[in-house]
Amino acid sequence: MGEEEIPLIYGLELQARSLAVELAENEVSRFMVGTQTLKMANNQIHVVEINDETTIINAQVYNHPVGELWHLHWSPHDSLMFSSTFSYVDDETNVLNKCAIWKLPPSGQELEEVAQFKGYDNVKMSVFHPTEKEKFAMVCENKFVVWDLGNGSPKEVFERIVDQKGHTKITGGKWNPQESGAHLCTFQDTNVKGWDLRSPSAAWSLDQAHSYLVRDVDYNRNRCHTLASCGDDCLVNIWDLRNASTMLKLSGHSHWVWSLRYNHLQDELLVSSSSDARVILWWVGSVASEPNDRYPDGKLVDFSDHEDSVYRLEWSNVDPWLFAALSYDGRLLIDRVPRKHKYNILDIS
Image (cartoon, rainbow, N blue to C red; front, side, top):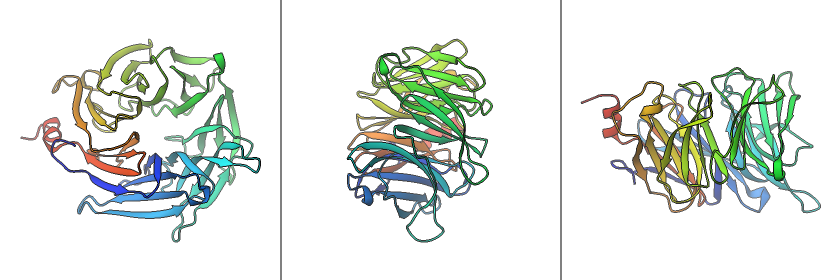
């Protein structure tokens, strides 16, 4: 449990491992959760709203009948639009990983399908560009594809096949929020690579970023050339991309680290989640945009309220001290940075 405050809990009846935060809204904190059940037609999208004044959680549930959800991303430009990556079983009982873009309906429980990307059966995740509303990337097992969403229907504008030594599959990717729309990174096995779409070769490479599989990465949007990564070696690493060097290694989890996120406002704060059923809030002041030694680098708070693997977490886009973490048993916990740390960071006596 956090040091001072009891988390809000939103429970789903189904297992879940995909979580997204609403980025286009600046007044109310909202999170989206996708379920996983082998009864494909029974999968759901839950949109959970946090009322900061009363701490009451409101939720709307939508049907997602095309498959169990593995990844969600909410458009930072349209509060009604999101993408889902899901598993689908065809007529020959083959399990395919597909991608679609949806719109939330103004009423009712049926999602409006904007586009489904047919012909792509091994999609790992899909992400809207952080600043260019018509740009959308789809990361597959051996390549990534960039689409133009303008003019009513998606148009493929770029494809890059990523070298697969030993046939290792790509597990994910992310746009760089600080560079132009041409920069994206992918993570594959133990490596992370950055790509400039205007160049035929990788812009940078973190070879052996982790001893075992890389699970997630996040850019520090407040400091250029800075990336955090996590993986199956139980570590969180922070990198200087200019020379592919490690600036900080954080050890505290006892199992695979699935997800991590920088705080959008206070980049001295980094949060991570793991199969050890814990969420850790780290202080990384020495490598922040404005170095801060208020605390020593390392674990600041250990949140142990979960009872199962914590697969995803996201900071609120509205309240910089609030974040949501999702465990596989379908429990979404809403936690806050403890007040004493918040006031200390803000230097409020």
